[in-house]
Image 1 (tube, rainbow, N blue to C red):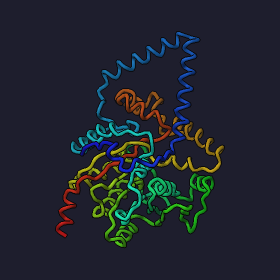
Image 2 (image 1 turned 180 degrees about the vertical axis):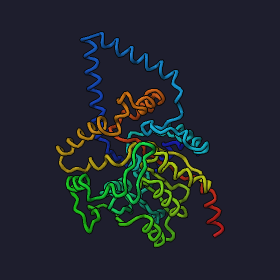
Image 3 (image 1 turned 60 degrees about the vertical axis):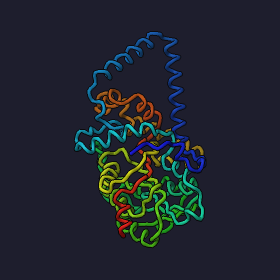
Image 4 (image 1 turned 90 degrees about the horizontal axis):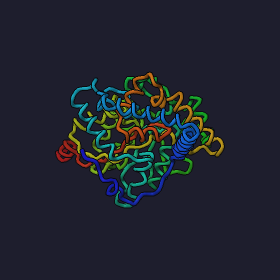
Length: 377
């Protein structure tokens, strides 16, 4: 696998798609906090001495810390030493290459905006969004690409328990549209469900209800000659991801772009793709490492003052109650693994967003044994 030159990957020049207001608000807060600290240091120079001493201690601790290269940027919480040697090496090589592919945007929209526009040559290609929640990822992908997108979901939540590394287990049924949070977003983004399915709202999308275990194969069978141009995986769990990859394997072509929303969960999508590419000897190039799609829902809240309140609540919640606690809960392993073991670039990258940066895209450049299977057929 090799890192693709992002300039050469931009086939169309890109249609600008920016849904990162939440993160700009967060960076503005960081800038104001920095100014406040600078002003405090001017008034009380002893504070500057304390900060300098703390930073010097951090530098020393980083030099003697032995945990480098063992943890991943998913909050630097997972010790990859629990995995076999082959998978550990895959993770290390992936991270080294992904660090050259960092983007500030949402990976899915970044990729969708770079797809070739609709034409007679690509009219039979399909764009798949697997796991759509209330549907904004699908609608915004259609807008960014100018092409039709098919969104798959049960709309009744996870179809199996989702174990996020060694942190937490999210139970089956979570993320159902009947949950209070989903109902609030449905209302605040101006949606009205139709037979339990989100509306298209004028976008060129089609939502397909049901488990992908049951719906994906018949969908592809009804389009026997359709290659997959864009494959967006947001089903979260290892089992669903691996099943979708296997189901779609005969529709991947050289140039197919795969976007994984939760790629840096080592026992989920990352593990599924590792096994998939190993089984078939695929060749690919990493293209981008950026923001997940979840925060895009907030951008679609219709009232500006509600949208602003969402921004502030999400920022406060992420850094005080949510996953962002890894940056300041001093007595937890995640804190020490992050500040002592993470490269400086990764630290800045992770702290520069009020949300998760686990979304990764890659492009298939060689089909391995899949090509020989098709030739034989």
